Image (tube, rainbow, N blue to C red):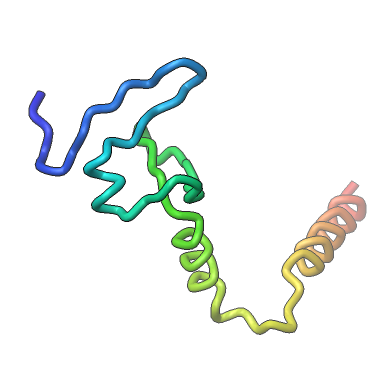
Length: 89
């Protein structure tokens, strides 16, 4: 198996720990204490800076007005759905 330039093989150690190779840490400007978010994408493990994830979420929901309360809307939708189900019984 041949790896593309910039790819590094890492080994999963005790308690599931991995070490990000020095070259990648330098290229990505990662420092001790930086927080990363881990998620699975298919069979891949993706690590992203927390700030990157927060920015993506802000951008995704930017079109929603600041006075909208999504949790309250979700609760109202669920209650309406439960009421419909009760009426159908």
